[in-house]
Length: 38
Image 1 (cartoon, rainbow, N blue to C red):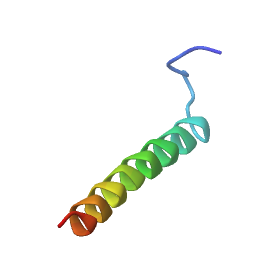
Image 2 (image 1 turned 120 degrees about the horizontal axis):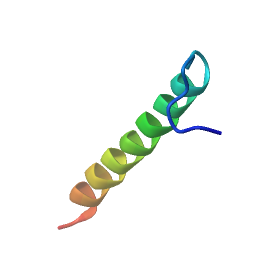
Image 3 (image 1 turned 180 degrees about the vertical axis):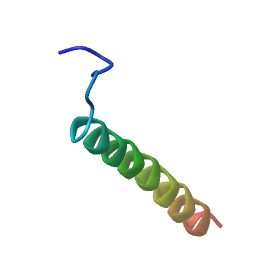
């Protein structure tokens, strides 16, 4: 499985979705931590 697909239609979109989800989870955790901290 190559890192850069010559024809990335569905794989790259899924990878981007996973990356965006991880980024969003990190942001949500940061916001929750900042709210929970006194």
